[in-house]
Amino acid sequence: MTASTKPVYLLDFMPDDWREAVTPFVDPAVVAALSSFVVEEYRTATVYPRKQDIYAAYRLSPLASTRVLILGQDPYIKAGQAHGLSFSVPQGVAVPPSLVNVYREMRDDLGVDPPPSGDLTPWCRQGVMLLNAVLTVRAGTPNSHKGRGWENITDATIRALNAKAERVVFVLWGAAAKAKAPLVTNDRHVVLRAGHPSPMNPTGFLGSRPFSRINAALTAAGTLPVRWSPAMPRH
Image 1 (tube, rainbow, N blue to C red):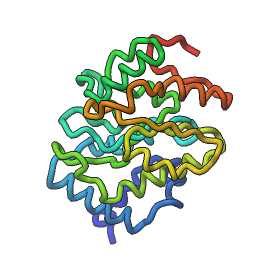
Image 2 (cartoon, rainbow, N blue to C red):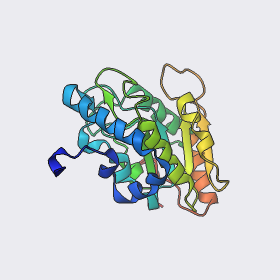
Image 3 (cartoon, rainbow, N blue to C red):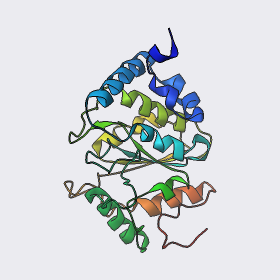
């Protein structure tokens, strides 16, 4: 079989550190079926994010430095929004409603102004992994790639973080994210649960104070807090 005809296997495109860590926890048959599905979807439909951004969360948050995981559901479904990070949008894109609520809670929790845009990559550079449970989606159709196998890879990602010797804070917003809590089994880690920040969910998120609670868990473990907003003092 030549390289040109070799089937795509999605884990081959994951950064090396993460691929090594998640491989023991994945089902290769599930990943192979997912790979075939994703290739066909990109060939025949409009799919988000761009192919080169599918693993952006892994690229921007190396395993060794990841100390917080904020878990989303699947990518944004409108053009220009999804760039491979949960809740985040690229510079210059209007802040989506769920992220508006996240920023509102940040202001109420920390008493600081939120970031000037919806691009959350500065969080990633501080060890915050912004991961969706499903990493691709068909344009305009939420959950269109749910149940196709991405969950096998992202559950394996949670298991890999659970295996770390250093504390990781797992932030689970909404029922789908909270259902992942049993994957976190080591007492050294902290799991924070709250409702989803979507405006369609009027209770359970606002007032949950996630940002100060994350930083308290980090400092209790002897690590630096996250600078969530440019308005916060530098460490």
